[in-house]
Length: 162
Image 1 (tube, rainbow, N blue to C red):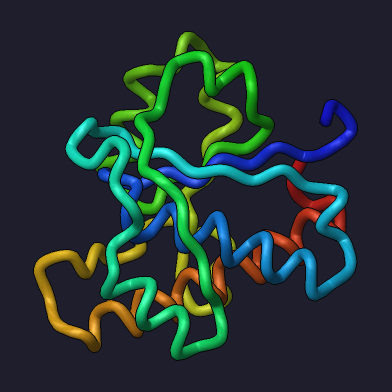
Image 2 (image 1 turned 90 degrees about the vertical axis):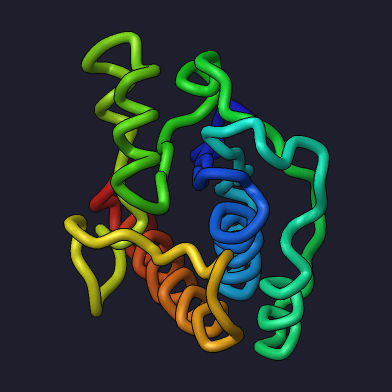
C-alpha cells in the first residue's frame, strides 16, 4: 500500500458526504483505470454515528445516479495523519476540527477542502450537509461531490497535488 496515494475524506458524522466522496473517488478512479494507484477511506470528526451505515437518503440518490455503496461510520483519529497522504474535509467546520487535531505543519499540509477541486466552486466553499433538508439537497451534494472527486482525480493524475 506504500506506493499508493492514500486519501481520507472527512465530514461530521461519516454517514453522508465523506462516505459518498470515498466511494465516488473509487468509482471514478476505477472507471479511469487508475484505481490501483489509490487507497481511499472516510471518517467523521464526531462520534455521533460510529458503526452506522451511510444515510439511506444519500445512498438512494447515489443509486439513482449509478453509484451503489455501503460501509460503517468511524471517527477520525489523530494517527490518520500518519496513515494518509491527503485528508479532505468536506467543509470549514471540519477543516477547523482537523487543524485543531494536527500535530504541526506537516499534518496541516495534508489538508485540502473538498471544493478546492470543484471546477464550479472554490476552497472557500464547503460541501453542503443535506441531513436536515429535502431530496433536492442530497442531489445537489451528490453533484458537488462528483465534480470535486473528478477534479481531485484529475489534479492527482496531472501531478498537481501530492
